[in-house]
Image (cartoon, rainbow, N blue to C red; front, top):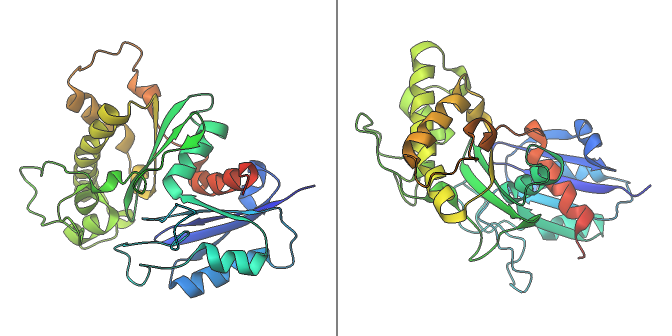
Length: 291
């Protein structure tokens, strides 16, 4: 039976698995994301002595996804220290000697949720992750959206909350969506990791993140018109977050346009694939690529 390798490379942790299909993802191995060399080496250990048909690599970005570019398969100008210019495809291809396909983690997650998860059967799907960074991916008819180079929703402009004096965390744009609402921004405000917050601080953090992410989703909805938005990532699991986000998005849209079928409980949803959306996307692109 044919098996494929899949990797999800995140800013905090990375995951690898050898799988026949999505039912095998629970056997994935997770490691801490450190340096490019160490992280990739540890992920490749999962594939040791295994004959695979190919590997799908879903990674945080920005990425060079143009196969004609000499920088294909590399991370470009990321704010994550030590990772700018890191070659991802090259080391994996040399070690496994099989075709390696790369995609953004959020595009891959959108594709997987459209194929196997919370947006199954839907043509225009967006996946948004809120964690160490904020990213958005688009799957249109099962195909990822690329361009110059690919969507970067986390760096869109947002209005600063009138009670928020935080200067922003993004080294490129300061008070962009990611700079105001990603995990490092919350940690800097509260001097605590988001997962360690409780009580009034947790409510304040949740409401701030929902306030900013709702603006990003308004931009996404008006520009890309997704038929469903899947919201994942660590911060999306804060108590009451999805309900708060739905209310904020409804307020942002203010009834325009009037779309009768836009039931927010069905329109903004959690990933059915859970923490494995990106990894499932890596598996999917390995299985379906013609490279």
